[in-house]
Amino acid sequence: MPRIMFPQHKRGRAGIECFEGTILEHARRLGVQLPSECGGRGQCRRCVVRVEHGAEALSEKTSAERAAALAEGERLACQARVLRSADIRVFVKAAGPYAILATSESRPVALAPRTYRSGDSVILNTPHGEETLGRYRGGIFGLAVDVGTTTVVSALVDLESGATIATLADPNPQTAYGDDVISRIGYTRDHEGGLAELQAAVINSLNDALVEWERSNRQVSNQVYDVVVVGNPTMRDIFFGVDVSSLGVIPFQPKSTKAIMASAAALELRVNQAARVYGGPLIGGHAGADAVADVLASGIHTCSEPSMVVDIGTNGEVVVGNQDRMLAASCAAGGAYEGAAVGCGVGALQGAISNIAIRDGHLRYQTIGGKAPIGLCGSGLIDLLAELLRTGMMNRAGKLATPNRQFPIDGNAGLVLTQEDVNNLMVARAGMSLDQVALIARWGIAPTDLQHVFLAGAFGNYVSAENAARIGLLPDLPDRIVRLGNGALEGARLMLLSQDKKREAETVARKIQHVRPNEDSEFFDALVDRMCFQAWG
Image 1 (cartoon, rainbow, N blue to C red):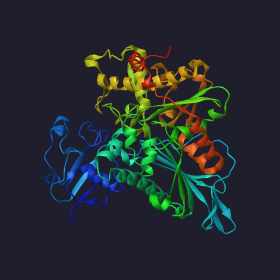
Image 2: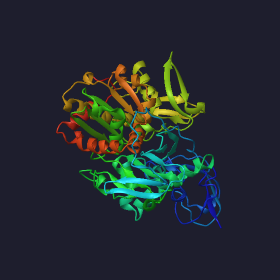
Image 3: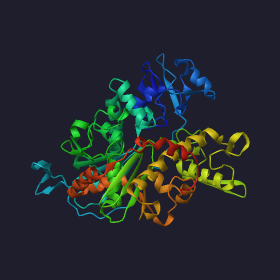
Image 4: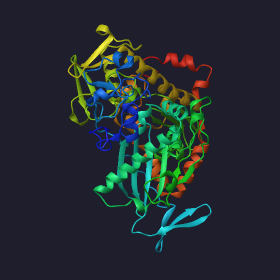
């Protein structure tokens, strides 16, 4: 039986029977993660693969492929179609392990999960009373899940002791359907069964992570009775199979901001089938349960002085406030600071340049894992922009003062920062900084009045706060920066361990006022003013 195989990937080694479709479509069905920030339209040129066997069974190169200047044997997975049955072997160029942030600052919490042991039974505490989920099997576990646009991270938690047993982390396989939430919303709208396909991709990824962990550890899946899921509105609702089309059109609102509940059996999640799966409450617009979880993890909702939580990712979120008042905004920052829309950019893969300095005219850098350089991830891009600005090789308007308006990074690896790359980074910087400035101003304070600036997520954990402030992505408050780590996962863990924290999250979500800076009459003028790289002032 002719098959198409992706031998680098555990899910793709056995392959899949050929059908008339693109290499990308075969990869999606297998759960093989191929970058495709344009959603398969041949525009981003990220899905480059090398066909090692069976090229004769594929369609001729398209105009998009001819324009991509591909090397011999290379194809764009979204353009190369399987026309005839044959054994096809595909090597994925962008493959490699991600350095995913799976740790966070743990906050103490009184242990009071909604699932607990009573005699020989496992009991679920519901609003309608106690429900028996089954016989006690030696343990009661829960799963806290942060479904990010780029990654899926989960914590396996012992609900009897409160201890985290393991943290599981993988790239979100939905990146094969588009880099950002708008692309994925569009896929669910334009493809019959698209919502179910995206839902299955993330559920299967989580199931696979559990299976992989159990291979070298103990079997616990059937003792997982409670699951808490957080994510931005698109990611949360796709996980539960909820229609997300309203998030792609004005006024960009989810169907409901309330917390959501489903059974593990209905979601086909590989845990105890009597388990309940709880989706955290949303704020509004594209500000979601992950932002609510960040607030829980930071504790700003319990403080008298105002602070700010910033989660910079493909879907950026900002919350400013204290125990009396909180404001939130979301920014479709795009994937620029996660390597998308930048020619030399990559995600946080092994070999990604993560730190850069220019000393005596020489560029020095470090890569993730000490591997040969393959591109720059977000922290490396921030460092490079700040260094170019500091050395005068780029002005505040973002114009490169280098030959051909390009800056060579590594000639052997073919890595070059172009003026177009800088422009894309500047747009993302403008939107993200404007949300922060707008919320701070609307709250009625100056940036220097903030007690703390909490940085959540992988970007906030690894970025140089000094360099981010130099280019104006963050306020210049070095002594007030607090790195939360994966705040969304920590917030989900708190909700898993405490019924009070679940109720607190729902109260917090209702209390936060969602602000849309782009509806302000002066928004676009303010956005244009921020199309630059300079510290706040």
